[in-house]
Length: 437
Image 1 (cartoon, rainbow, N blue to C red):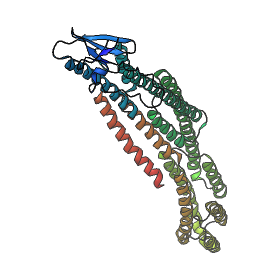
Image 2 (tube, rainbow, N blue to C red):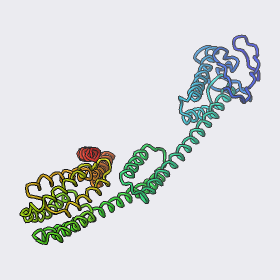
Image 3 (cartoon, rainbow, N blue to C red):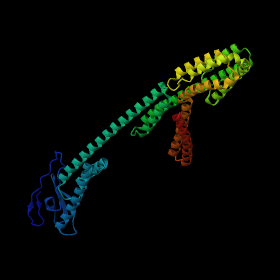
Image 4 (cartoon, rainbow, N blue to C red):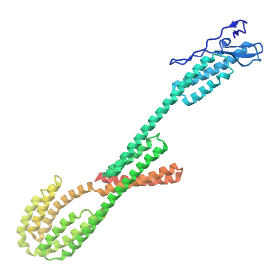
């Protein structure tokens, strides 16, 4: 049915329906308000019609004014919808809009076009809506693919971290480095997001089990080390008992030889706990000193016979004072040991020379011992173990704080933070002590 122009009374041609746009650009939708009679009419009874590809369709009734005013009213309503669709498209293309919301809104408008009270190019609007819907569906599919890709990457990374933790737990004996690496893995683990709850829980159980296994194995290692030191302490106490028992002996030569053997056994016993090792050594040395002091008292009566011994010892001291423990500790110890053996073989010197000669030799011994003690302190595993234990306590309280905070218990979290801070201070002091050795 031909449209009649309400202003001239002459029939107007039907508009050509828009075909579905197949290009990449959005299909154009002409505004209706400038020429509303192109897209509809109002008959004498006030019924409003819109022209479609299938013919005219009644969209409403106009009684409030002239037919031209009525058409403009319905055309404006069309243009409002047209603007809404364009805004959806603009936000979608720019990336500022939510594809899901755009798809829902565009679909709702499209589904309501068949009954919409609008006057305008409905076919063009439908094509524009189809374009927006297609674009939104592609955006949703792309976003879904990106989420899946990110999830797969996150799962793969956590699997790698769990496997590395399991390998550390099974094989590593570098306790400090391995402990540091497990803490770094935990820090990274917290930053990896996007894994579904079930998979994340499974991977976390693997990592947590590995970390606990490593901690148990490390604890067993240091427990065994403590056991060995306790055994060394017991053995040294036995050597001290013998050294003290023979300190009253008057069999000077044999007893002196036995003290040398005891010294060899003392060194072979290993380190006792640090808090008792020095005290044990002082007791052992005191027993030796007691014996040799007695022997010196007896031999002092024969000082005249020992003047030549004093000269020989002075020759030994010349060699001893050339010893450079800083240059080569093992060579220095060997040289000193040989000199000590020769020193004892020579025998006693006049009493007035004992302090001088023994003091010079002791200075060399102290120099070598100081170099040896310095090397030992630099490699003392006990100090490192203590630092590791402090570090573990810091981690435990930090973990408690995190759990309490996650549970909303700020009081417990604050208390755990304070405990962690205290242990952290002790850890820093222990690490500084190791670094200064």
